[in-house]
Image (tube, rainbow, N blue to C red; front, side):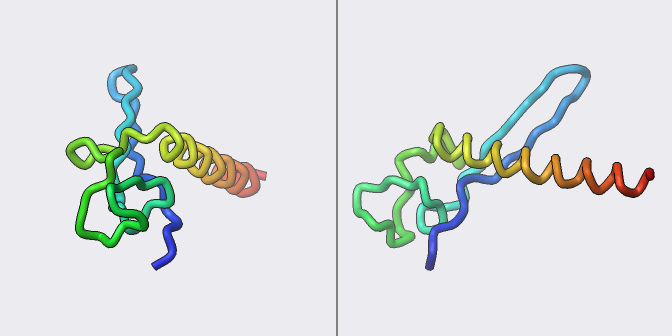
Length: 83
C-alpha cells in the first residue's frame, strides 16, 4: 500500500475559540509515520501517535497546506457562482 496521507484534521471556531485536532490515519497509511520496524507493517503504532492524535509537526504542516489548498479552491468556486 502506498503511503499518501498525513493526518485527518478537525477544525472549528466555537464561541470565538479556534480549535484543531489532528487524528492519526495509521502507521501503514501515513507517509510521515515512524515505527520501531520500518517500513510499518500495520501491527504497531507510529511513535507520533498519542492516543490516536498525530503529534508529528511535518504531518500537521502537510495537512494544513492541503486544507488551505482545498479552502482556496472552494472560495474560488463560490466567487464564480456569485458572478
